Length: 506
Image (cartoon, rainbow, N blue to C red; front, top):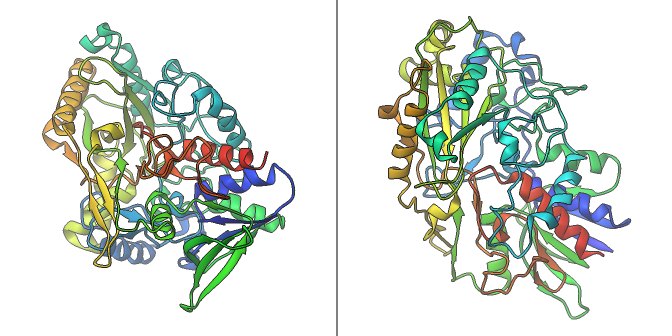
């Protein structure tokens, strides 16, 4: 059977795994696949990077990042902003947006999937199947009371003492929210990061530049491995524009190459996993509904600093995983009807250098090193995400004049203030203060988390649990999600894509 998988991100990688588990097939992965080699010195251990290297890197970072929180890069490459937007991204590199993510890897829960036409119990085996193909760090802790199953297979990352102290303070506090039985809990971050084996993290603190040894998972690792074993054919420079049924019952894809030439190729099955927005564009073109307006969900996101005013142990903040070092959750209760997901980061060298380079040019990088050494161990940054229900009313449209994005944040500004106030009260007398006056939202649409344009059970296209949108054509990414819980959705994208691909061949 000749099969096309469209895209090069987590959905496409997991679809390949599902297809190959059901026998031998001629699987073609069609992807734009822009290369991200970067300068050769970036493949060296970061400790070998010189001052000129850093200056070169930060000229690139400054050229792409307008705000004080920079975009995550990968060896000099950045995700692409949609025309006319400042914060809405796509990726045309092999690996998709997983080349630029923070590696948070949590499942949805049974409560999260209450409005889905499939249950957590039906999806759970596919979470475990995904774990067979990549490494996830984590451990059993207080968060395990909410995320019930041990969906990790690596030791947790090592974290500086200040994060351990903050986690203990959150879990030990007897604040008002704790007495409600629906308060804050803390635990080890669940990260798709190798902490053992040949690709084990070296704690160099340069995660935001793109991991030089692939400790952080990205979908290209899976696709490259399957391609090297001759189980799939990876075809870069292939942009799929649309599909249509042929007279013989096969599906014809219109494919544009890098030279701009369009060709038509037939396949027995097609699995679309190009990312929520791009997959929706392909479906809209193919089914003649390009003038329709599609609902879309994202996770409204805020950030706020946390300061420790005690005397923590001396910590070299460049000897850490620069990703999420502590995971907090605000459990449902009171005004918070949905779980709120909170990730606490070190103010790592990438952030310090970006801030000082913006203020003083690349000559500010040595000052960043000094600031990091003096107060870096006492200032943390918390990013927190709300459930996608708060973005209800957001929409996506396609037109010759450009894509139309309209993202809403609902009443999350009010909720964010309440959350920060509650957390600060929860941490009273522990030495930690949440600096509410410095809290700010990320611009609507900027979370990288998009879903729900063609939801299972709720779309005018009649998409069911099998995610089939036309005969022999399946949609395998988050476009089919009926809802978007607060935690990162990549794990669920991969689990559901594997489920759809495997069950479509059974």
